Image (tube, rainbow, N blue to C red; front, side, top):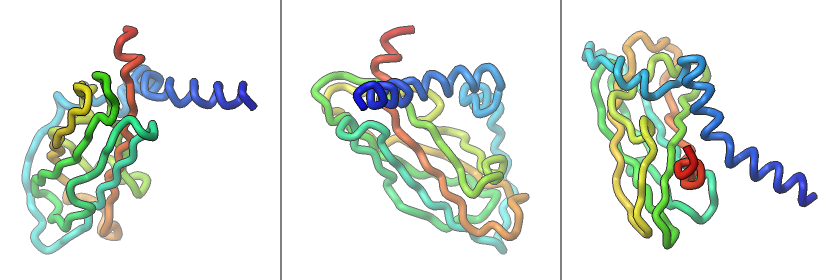
Length: 166
């Protein structure tokens, strides 16, 4: 059981670096590449409203407080919106964290465009530091008409160990 527990911990700890390597190798989900491609073109659909839900979860229990400032918002596709997430380092040491986003339902990520996001780069926190972190996004008006709700979820990983070892 100890070996299985240690293996599960090591696997969980290695997920963020593995995700970054996979993204660089395939070009899929590569935040650095996407950050350069972000084009804000508003073509607002005033006749349609959808709900965006925000979900936040820290991957390591006890290291961070992490939550969205609002649980959901009603938006018009094609319009640029802002929201914020709050994160606080609960440890007595400086740390580095990385947020990994996901959009659901499956297949809708191509319609959700982040133009500014704390998930694009690792976030450095001083001991006990807390701050608001912005997300600017636009939902493509081409989102299929049967979709009336999207969920933007972030998992917040403590990457202090991997950040200190290049």
